[in-house]
Amino acid sequence: MGQGFFGYNPPKFITDAAKDALDKVDCNQYAPTKGRPRLKKAIAKAYSPLFDRDIDPDTEVVITTGANEGMLSAFMGFIEPGEEVVIFEPFFDQYISNIEMAGGVIRYVPLQPPKNGGSEVSSAGDWTVNMEALEKAINSKTKMIVLNTPHNPVGKIFSKSELQAIGDLCVQRNLIILSDEV
Image 1 (cartoon, rainbow, N blue to C red):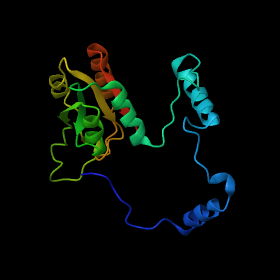
Image 2 (cartoon, rainbow, N blue to C red):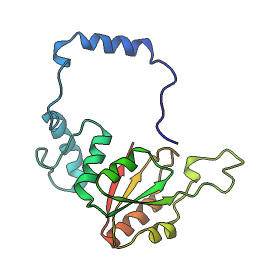
Image 3 (cartoon, helix red, strand yellow):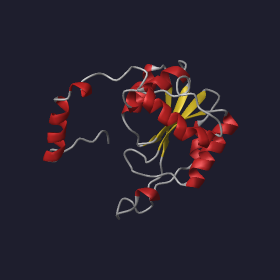
């Protein structure tokens, strides 16, 4: 499994809107490298109540030109050569090159498919995390767990109890969670 690609063209109103936008001079310029100030302020304002403190948009909000750039930046910033990163299988294929580029070593923990998943249609939510397998994958070299919810490519949305158990384990073992929320 890997990246999906569209098998159809977008609706005409979308392509027409894109063509119209190209005719507007104010839309044909790169955004500031650090992100648009108005966007950074809006993000800081939205998240400040969740952290019960004011977030500084200039020093605590990072804007990237895409999820892959953001994730690569996190791997490069937090992972030292030889440190391990846990990812759940199956996984988004971009993780591998990003982790390896940072010098990280990947530890795989398979999500458990539904018991009857090979013979019957089942929900993505029926896939589960085997916490015992996750705990066994963690050792003194483990630095991070990549958590992708909704999970790509399965579509699983991790339950509150699964998220709590993974979070508790990360606090106990002093691990970073890189949360890839698509």
